[in-house]
Amino acid sequence: MCIISVIVVVTVLLAAIVTMIYKAYDTSYRDQTNSLAAAYCQMFRNNIENLQLNIKSVESRTDVLDETIPLEERKAKLAELASTSIMKDFSVAYGDGTTYNNTDLTQREYFQTAMKGQYAISAPVVRLTDGSVTTMLAGPVYTYNNKQYVIYGSIDSLYFSNGLDTSSMAEGSNIIVMDKHGQIVAASDTNLVMTLANYTSEENKKYNALAAEMLSKDEGLYKYKLDGVEYIAAYKTVPDTDGWKIAVNENYSGIRSSILIDIFVILGISLAIIAIGVVIVLKVSKKIVKPVIKNTNRLRQLSEGDVTTPFVNDSPKDETYILSESMVNTVETLRIYINDIRDVLSALAAGDLTVKSNIDYKGDFVEIGKSLNQISSALKSEMSEIKNGIVNMKEGAKQVAAGSQSLSQTAVEEAQAVSDISETVSKINEQAENTAKVSERVAELTVNTTENAKSGGELMKEMLDAVQNIKDKSNAIGNIIKTISDIAFQTNILSLNASIEAARAGEAGKGFSVVASEVSALAAKSQLAVENTEALIKDSLDAVNNGTDIANRASEEMNAIVADISRVAEEIAQINAAAVEQKNSITLINENMSKIEAVMQSTTATADESAASGEQLSAMSANLANTVEKYITE
Image (tube, rainbow, N blue to C red; front, top):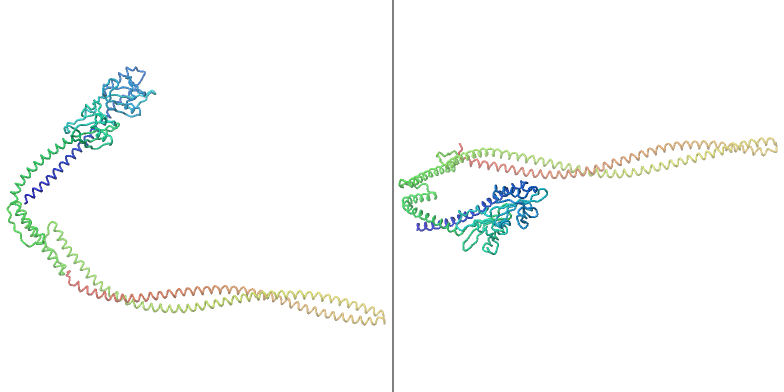
C-alpha cells in the first residue's frame, strides 16, 4: 500500500514537473524570441545611424554643390566619396526633384520626406538609372547659395538582410523587416527582398493577417499557422524609421517537438533515478524504519506530556543510534527541567518566595531558568512592597479616620457658624428693608418740603413787590402832602395880605379881617396837619424800607433754604438708592449663605462617610496584613 502511494505521489509530481518544464521552456522560447527581436531592432538602429553619418559627411562638402564646378567633376567627387563609404554611390537632387543623373525623384517617398527636413530611408525600389533593385537613403533638404539640395545615395538592397541569422532558431523559422505599407525591407529569405514582396498584397494573402497584426501595434507576440505549421512572431517597431517593423518568426511546432523530446529525456532519467532510489530505500528502510518508529512513538508520548517513561536505546550503531541517543537525552533533560519547574512553582504556591532554581538550563531553556528565578525575585520584591504598603495603608487609614472625624466636627461647627451668620444677615436684611422704606418716606417729605419752600419763596417775592408798591404810593402821598403844604403856605400868605388890607379898610374891613383870621388859622392847622402827615409818611417810609430790607434778607434766606432742601433731597435720594442696593446685596448674601450652609451639611455627611470608610479601610488592611503574613520573603 505504501509503495502504491509512493508511485501515485511520484506520478503526480512527475506530471507537475513535466507541466512546469513545458511552461518554462515555452516561456523561455517566447522571451528568447522577444529578446532576439529587440536585439535586431538595436542592430537596425545602429546601421541606420551609420548610414546617416555617411550622408552627413557628404553634406559638409560644398564642392559637390558648387555649380561653378563642372557637373562631371562634382559627380566624380561623389563617386570618390562613395568608394570610401559603405554606400554604393552618392548623388544630388535639386529642390524640384531633378538630379545630377537627369532623373526625377518627385514621386519617390524618400525624396518627399527629405524635403520635409528629415532623414529618409526607402524600402527596396527599382532604380530609375539602371533598373536594379536597391535601397535609397536621403538626408534632409539643404540650402546652399539660396538653392535647395538633397544629398541621397543607394545601398545594397540586401544590406539589412545580411545580419539576419536564423541558424540558432528552429528549422523553418525566419526573420522579416516590413515597412508601413507591408513591403519586405529585409528578410532572412533574401528572395522576398529582391522580388519586392508585400505581405498586404493579394498575392501574399496567407501573410495578410500577420501584416495586419504588425501594422496595428508597436510591438507584441502573435501566434499563427502557415501551411499547417504553427509559428509565433515577436515583432517590434524599428527606431528612427518611418514605421518599419521587424518580426522574428519562430517555428513553434518545431520548438514544441524539441521541448517534448527534452522533457521525455528528463522524464526517462528521472524514472531511472526513482527506480534506483526505490530499491535503495527498500533495503535501507528496514534498518531505519524500526528505530524511527520507536522514536516517533516516544515523541508522541512526549507531546502528550509523558516525561517519566524511560527510553532505551537499542538501535544499531549507525545514524539511528545517534537519533535514539538524542531521544534519551531529550527525555531525561525535559524530565529534569519539568521537575525543577514543578518544585519551584510548588514552593511559590506554598508561600515560599525565597525559592530558587539550581538546575543548569541549556540552550533555549536558559530563558526558562532565568524566568523562574526572576518570577521568584519579582514576587518576593512585590510581596515585600505589599507588606510595607499594608503597614502604611493601616497608618493612613487611621489618619483618614481621625482626619474625617475632625473634619466632621469642624464641619458641624462651621455649619452652626454659618447658620448664625445667616440669621444675622436676615436681621440686617430686615433692617435694610426698613431703612429703605424710611428713606423712601423721607425722600417724599423732602420733595414736599422743597415744593413748599419754593412756594414760600414765591410769596416772599410777591410781598416784596407789595412793599415796593406801598413805598411808591407813600412817595406819591408825600408829593401830595407837599402840594397841600404849599397851598397852606400860600393860604397863610393870602390871609396875611387880607389882614393887612382889612386893617387898611378899617371898620369896613373888620368882617373881612375875621375871615382872614380864620383862614390864617385854618392855614396854620393845615400846615400842622401837613407836617404831622409828613412825619407819619416819613416814619411809614422808614418802616417800609426797613421791611423791604428784612423781606429781601428773608427772601435770600428762603432761597438758601430751598437750595439746601434740594441738596438734602438729592442726598436722601442717594441714601435711598444705596439702601435699595444694600438690600439687594444682603439678599444675595443671604442666598449664598444658604448655599454655603447646604455645602457644609454635605461636607459634614461626606466627613461622616469618610470616617466610616477609614474605619473599614483600617479593618481591611488588618485582614490583608494577616493574609500576606503567610508568604516567606526573608
